[in-house]
Length: 389
Image 1 (cartoon, rainbow, N blue to C red):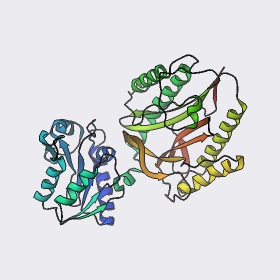
Image 2 (image 1 turned 90 degrees about the vertical axis):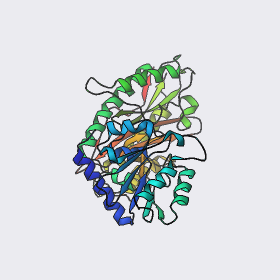
Image 3 (image 1 turned 90 degrees about the horizontal axis):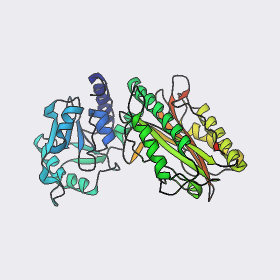
């Protein structure tokens, strides 16, 4: 297991405390990041039904897995083998059979079928069929949305989690430097991504990398005015900018970063816009400290953009930590106006500023840790527009 058993027990206690406040007796967590956080389970098995059960009166969570994946549960988790429950292969893509029908029977057998049950209603991989199966199979239970209960517990990191993110940051830096070196006129985008991925997986001599929850994002040319574009086989063109958004990953902990490269002669408009972007990021970072809110950070950030007449509608940050596809965000706090989430030491977030203007754009970001008295950046790499003449 990745962490000491004591840390997993502390996490479980925090989750149970939150369950008690929300009147939840039994929590069914489907988010693979939450499953990892609660038990240590880590495998590419999230494409099909699996979950962790947390009952308010049980000493350990229960890991509900496909029989084929039970071995991963024995290897990766800290929990006793009796608390790893495997469902039969007959439930795999054999409609109308479904693994949650077996899950319902387990809940009935344990006499939890009249409990207040919390579900992660908006979690990735929790399908409408999963919900309907639980609702129909447990008519005497009271079902409610757990409202990302475990995600919110994850927002404040332990020191051991911070160390993993710091390792991920070193990998991120190496990956971005590879991107800077590899992006040149006439080179295919896919070839550059191949080099970036090699660097991200290779990691450092001290620690290796892992797959990221989001593919390497590499919008170029007019594509810089859009979001979340991935590489093609097209070649880079002199005079065009390219945005790189990547994340180093260590033991499933992410540390994302975005930077912008310009091939060819200086473009003053892009240079000035990047300077304004960085000024806005610095303003937000300057008020990132315990006692302030996500809204305080956002207000400072947008205050600079307003000064320069730059419009940005999307949020400019979100909580990060453990991640599985399709997202490395924790789906909790947002750096946006109106988000009153209180910043505490070891809250970690990705503050990302993408500026788009119809047919061009620039972007930069930082992964940030709230410290006891302020904040610190996980990575150390200039945010200036990287110009390759």
